[in-house]
Image (cartoon, rainbow, N blue to C red):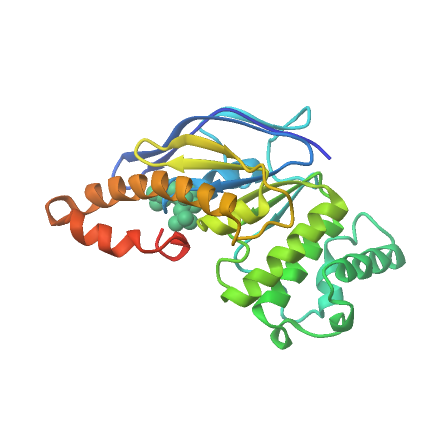
Length: 281
Ligand SMILES: Nc1ncnc2c1ncn2[C@@H]1O[C@H](COP(=O)(O)OP(=O)(O)OP(=O)(O)O)[C@@H](O)[C@H]1O
């Protein structure tokens, strides 16, 4: 297990074609403690994925640095496992072979197989180890992707909207699964979502990001006992609080994007009746 320290990280994308640049965020400071589950929540385009990719070493910060434990992030590494919205499994390999694939360098054939089977057990896919990706549902594919990441025994699990493309029931089942996995493994988890409920259900802390200028606008501690009930009064209260702040951010973005076409009444109608703003941001 290891902590993640994001220190004064800024990111600017340069567009060489027209010599312009776009600063996503100027300076982000965030400390994710060892074993902590932290969600990044915010409107579309605020830079959640960009920040996660920088921590993953898939993208480079324009300034600042990221540490996993004591080690500075210089690129992708086995200490960080990443799960994306799409499972990206190799279709010509079975479920077992997909998980074994990344383990071949580090482990003997037998060890890799045993390890893969254990992690597929953890995500409750023992019965499907010989199936091929096209025979699996979207939720099952994501469970394979999670097993594949965990089998490498990373210190940190980075998840970028892992359930964003799934239906509500499957998503809800996978929430339970992730909580179970987190309790079993106590990995440090950084989780990108635009779903308020999902973030309250799963996280110890929710980092709310804003846009233009991008950055952290608030951090919410979720001091609710697990497993969390969406029907509880405390849950609803926190949801309302986050919703209010997020709605303000979204309105700001819409105003900028629409300019004179922006109609605040219309926007309020569109957004305010949805507590779970997941589909709208
Ligand atoms: N490679 C790139 N080149 C130029 N701009 C980029 C690049 N990647 C991302 N951006 C821009 O950076 C901003 C942040 O993008 P990012 O995908 O991190 O946001 P996000 O909060 O994850 O959004 P979403 O919830 O829609 O996935 C966006 O305005 C996006 O257009």
